[in-house]
Image 1: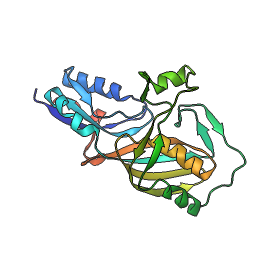
Image 2: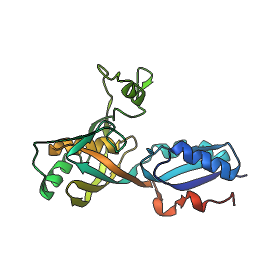
Image 3: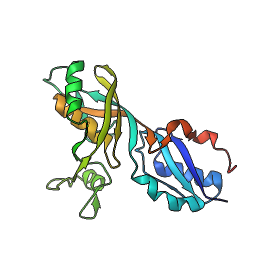
Length: 217
């Protein structure tokens, strides 16, 4: 078959590799790859390349992305998402809407972001999440990167949930952004939901759900 770029709306509970495996079976080919992963709990736009189009995927990896995310304030997670060990925070003031906007101003435009400890970033040839799971992060200098936040706006705020939309440079950890917003507010935060809605010029409105992809035609 000819090479195809396929836009998929990834469901929650599946890894990006799970989606690739499903598409391999549908199209009856092993030559399927993706241009940037989504965490299992996350949903949204995943760019897949099929057959010869797998050679094109590298040009999509570094594109800017847009996400809609919901953070739970007043608690933290070891993985900065709902899959980690949750710790409730105490002794903080519940932020007001104006406090949220002031905190977000710290990140608008961009900032030096410390990578998530449970990420695929490598230190000394080892992925951070592998070290974290084995409890071997002590003494490890977690990498930092200057990231660009071109847009960051509140969509909804009802304590303790903050839903926001962010457009950012490739390599930005939205989990880490939620963590840092929580620290800026003094109450802690972790992501409960994450949905990728745009990669470069590709939007979620053009993506298909897995159940809609029935055959190679």
